[in-house]
Image: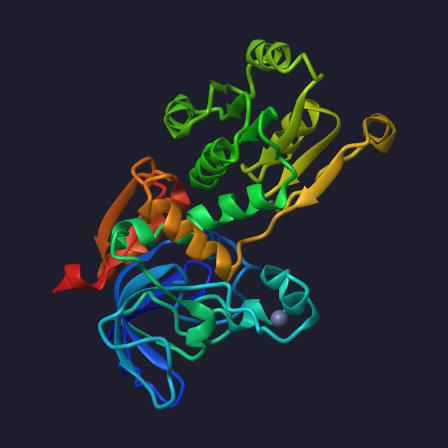
Length: 349
Ligand SMILES: [Zn+2]
Ligand SMILES: [Zn+2]
C-alpha cells in the first residue's frame, strides 16, 4: 500500500509498505481522509518536533476494514475517526480526570509517537482501538468528522474555562482553532464575544462563526474600541489565546478584567515576558489548555449531528495522498492557506 513517511525536517517521501494485518485486539481501518495538522507542518519545517521517523497522520476517518480476535465494539464496515488522545487509562492523570495530559499518550499516539504508522496511508493499524477509534454517527459526514482534531481543541479549552452565561469573552487568533473556540464560547452562552486577528479574511470568518465583533489586534483604535465595549467590568471575564504568538498573549492579558481568566491554547517556542509587578495586582488566573479527551470527541460528534456546531466555516482542500509532500510544503511556506488539507488515498485510484 502507499504511505507517506517522514524522515526528518524537510524530508518526506511517498513509499510502498506492507498493508497492516489486525492481530488480537487490533483493528485495521481503511482511510478515507486524513487531515494535515499544523503539528505535521511544523515538524516538516523545523527540528525538535518529531525527532524520529514515522508515517504521520493523527486525524483521520475511514471504514473498519478488519478486526482481530477479541475485539469488541467495532465491526467491519463501521465508520470511525482515528486519532488521539491515545492515553493509557492507567496513570495518575488518566485516573484523575485529566487523560489529555497522560504522559504515555504522546509516544503511543499513532502518527505522532516514534516509529508509529499514522494515517498518511491507505490503511492504518489501530493497536489500541478502545483509545483511538471513535464511531461516527450516521448524521455526521466523513468531511465533518475529520475536523475532530481542529474542533476538539476549542471545545476542550472552553469546557476547561470558567466561562458562565452572560460573561464577556475575547478570543485572539481566528485560525481553525480560534474558530472552534468562538463556536464553543457562543454555545456556552457568552455575552459579548470579541475576536482578534490581523487578517481581514479571518476576521470575516470569525463573525460567521459567531463573534459579535472582530478586530485587528495591531490597530490601536480597534483595541480601544474593544476596551470600550468591555468597560463595564474593566475587561473580559475570560480570554482565550488561540494564535500561539507572544503578542497575542499580551492582547488577551490586556483585555481581561482584574480577577479574570486567561486561557492559553496556542503553543509557541518563543519565550513570553511577564512583568509580575504589572500583572500581580490584577490577580489574573492564567490557565493552559491542551488537546481534548475521548469523551469530548463523542460530545463534538453529537453537537455536529444536531447542527449546533458549524463545520462549513473551516476551509478545506481535498488532495490525493500522493501529493502530501507538495501540500505540506505549500502549507509550510504559506502559499496555501486553508484550515485543513484532507489527504485522500481514494483520489489516487
Ligand atoms: Zn492534529
Ligand atoms: Zn495515562
